[in-house]
Structure formats: C-alpha cells, structure tokens
Length: 155
Image 1 (cartoon, rainbow, N blue to C red):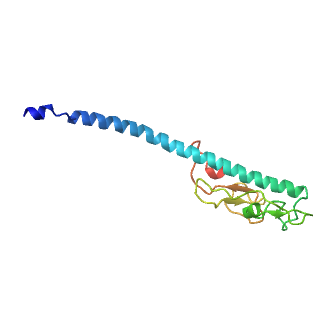
Image 2: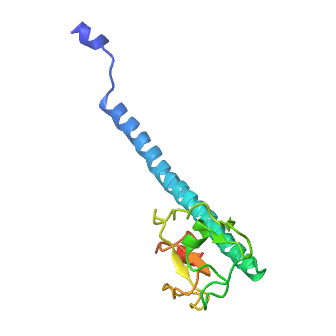
Image 3: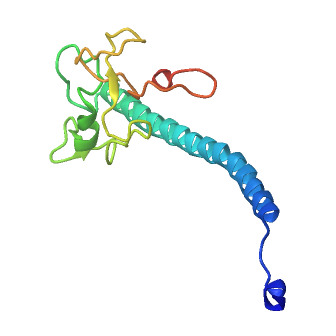
C-alpha cells in the first residue's frame, strides 16, 4: 500500500483543467490560421491580376506604337488570348525577333488552376462570358467573397 502512495500521477481534475486549457488555445488559434491563409491567397490573387493586366497593357501600348503587326479584325490592339502573351509576338519590321509579355500564365490561388475568366473590350464590364474578340481584362472564376463582402471576381 505504501508503494502506491508514493507513485505520482495526474488526478481527474488536473486532466480536465489541462484539457480545457488546450481546448481554449486551439479554439483561438484556428480562426487566426484560417484568416492568415485567406489573406495570403488574396495577396497572391492581387499579384497575379496585376501581372497579367500589366502584360495586357504593355501589349496594347506596343501595338499602338506600331511595334507589333496588326492582329485580326476587331481585336482593337489587344491580344487574342492569354497564350499570345506567353508565346510571344513577332515584332513588326524585325526578322526572328519575338516579344514575350509573360513567362507563364499565373495560377489562380482561389481556384488553384490556370483557368482565368476573360473579358474582351466589347463585353460588358460585369459580364462572366467572353466574346472571344480579344483579351481586355482577366478575373478569377471563384464565387467566394472577400472579408469586405466584394466578390473576388470583381477585383
């Protein structure tokens, strides 16, 4: 009997208190982690949209300066697809010289794919369909909303 009294261990009360403390700490950490992941995805989305939109603008500027050959009728000087920005365009009046605007199409962090929503110059600014004339703007196909309530597809 004396031998059992000298053995240390946790009582039921101590286990309940320790479990309660762990539960409280975990319940506070999970929302912080979710918010951190969402904030990181939003930052990546802004970066990807800015990169593609600046490439489209650069293409349009070079077209307006006459540095790129005329595209198909109705393109208004914008690229026909996003792949044109990656593959490159032969420079007007130059032999074997291509201008590339993107190394690769960035991955959409919200949908985890390289499939972006496209708008042409002739499309309505809020449309979700693409008229296929040209690429004037890009947006994510995610239906989720940001913390302020705006849909990611309107960024």
